[in-house]
Length: 169
Image (tube, rainbow, N blue to C red; front, side):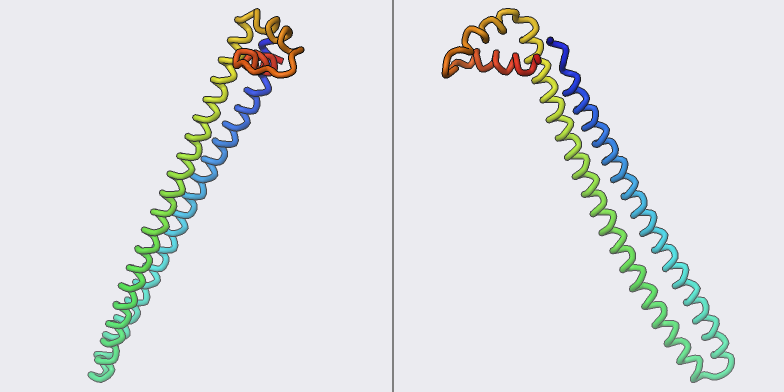
């Protein structure tokens, strides 16, 4: 009679499995997002460097041909360098924001998981305490059967016994 608390332990096991799955999914999402952001940043930087090299080569070739073309090519180099710097700064800002948001999400998930584990553990301990009292106190069922015929049960001990019988079933 007192050992029929397997349903509660099954629920707890399912909750713990769900928590572990959620944590794994969050970690995978965080890793994927960080990898994507880093790869995009590296690709953009490589493209910028290639564009800058092409502009420099064109500038050097133009300088060999004409002074006016060299001045125009030098202006183009300055524009490309400014664009590269602006894009790199923007990418770094985006990367920092993404990493901060992901860190906050991870912290939030960890806090939620810890709270759920604490609540689950508290419920399990409470149920175990009730079951131990029910199983060790033999008089509980007799006392409950005596008081069940009364219309209103007001004392706390009887309410405890009633819950004891409920959980022991």
